[in-house]
Structures are given as C-alpha cells and as structure tokens.
Image (cartoon, rainbow, N blue to C red):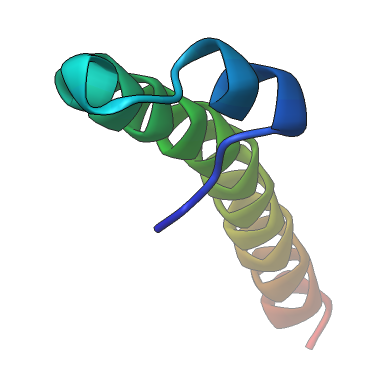
Length: 58
C-alpha cells in the first residue's frame, strides 16, 4: 500500500531512505486500521445489545 502524504513522500524520497519510507507507510496503515476496528467492535456490541433486548421483549 502506498499511504504516504505529499510531505512524507518529499521528506523520504530517494533510494537511501527506502527502509524509512516503508516504516512510515506501515505506521500510516496501522493508524488507519485502529479507528475502523473500533467502529466494528462498537457496532457489534450495539447489535448484540439490541438483539438481547428484542429477545427479552418476546
């Protein structure tokens, strides 16, 4: 994945910074994944809570 912003790409351009650029990309992807996981977990918990409430009402 190529997740670098324009400023990061300019700062890390060149062959000598290939490892640093890869590390920055990995960090950006890692930071992008966390909010999505939180939304999925919270959504699942809300679904589970809603499902248990509707089961008790029947």
